[in-house]
Image (tube, rainbow, N blue to C red; front, side, top):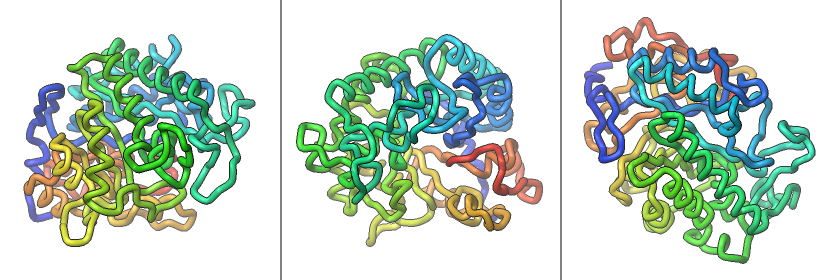
Length: 370
């Protein structure tokens, strides 16, 4: 690494959020909260990152209070007295280490499989009963009553986050989960006001954002994580041109998103031909809002390779391209995933120039899903 990482350690200041630096921990599912309750081990896990100069912790996905929200065993809930008490303990640990923390609020939609807790009889939910583009109806097609219930659940969870001292919330609108299933024409075939054009397919997300904003007030930060790619289709593009991207982002921006967390598999790749800007850069240019970039920061291969059975040990990669893009104003914040899983002190070590001491990521680390 030839460029100083110090720009990444400058304070971030916006009307609703102040952070000591630009480094965030990406949300990564761990499945280590029995019965949906995060224990002391979860608090210690996040505290270790916060005390090593991670300015913002974004928690693993936490499910809202809806019967079909959960998709995996051991996922933490963001409802119920025991789970919220567990999260309050996590907040205390992170704040005590000098960091700030957002929960990622999540509904998995059609990804839910039969037999999943808490009620194994509840099927997956999706806009049109489809689990993937081109598939057949395999789960529950959401009624308008269902939509209203899920919107309310997101608002209730956001209010709970504020009540227990969280510093903001992130809505999971990426990677083929429920909010994203409404975005994507491959899984949203509805003919009512929630389907149709790209803009109309944002309506569900807009209602969720508006419900969250109403629940937390004007001064509480709301972040939206979104992606072009899906679990089922890594080449998928919600918006294949800058013009369509502008149409997609405008209703979300107007609804009250404060920060856009733009999920890509490789932060250093341009989003569209004819420009070097990545997805975060385009989102910032089109919305005027702060943006967060993510995708293979500090590592030499994309995350899908790491999940392969025969994947090699992932090696540390320098972040000169990241610093160059940050210095150019392409994005405001950087979300770090696997590098922070492998080494809780990653941020402290890169700031001190100790690249030779950074631990590497191998399959079987502390996260299971990115």
